Length: 243
Image 1: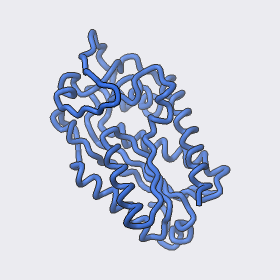
Image 2: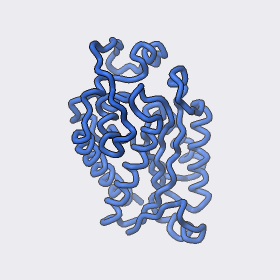
Image 3: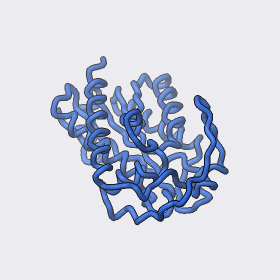
């Protein structure tokens, strides 16, 4: 089957394929990523992974795939104190994603896959998916791309502008990654298993980025990216087999 870029197609072309297609929507953010990574990191990774996975899946997929433009803004209020951040409030982010899902349904689409590239969007994605499914009869699937490799990564995944993300950026566009300063010590951020703690002070304590980005490499990023793309392509194929 084929990959259709939503923004390149006419209304008639989209209308012809949407009822049976999988619509893939990358969802990123524009926010500070420490002193060394570009603010568009999350949007870059969500868009890159979604496109590569869709192209890979299309080779053997039983449905067409429609790739929607990446949503480059997310729920990033926790990064506002550092500067360089364009954020939607959580409430607005949920409303925006729900409205986009509503629009897909209004155009004839019945299946939506959101490829999320930002940790702060996780709750937004699930709230919007539940709302869109209940209100508009849409099947909405959520993929937080880092979860596809988290169980076999030797470094913290996803972290934030740490070794994992910095390696991914180096593998896609090294000009968007400056050389990070080596950390002599990692600030402690207490954690309780099974408990999610939201504390703005934690972000300030670690200067807005995690773990050891100075250990990143393009080679590691390319390996992780290949694994993520392959895994997402497999998920798209499986979703295409559902009624």
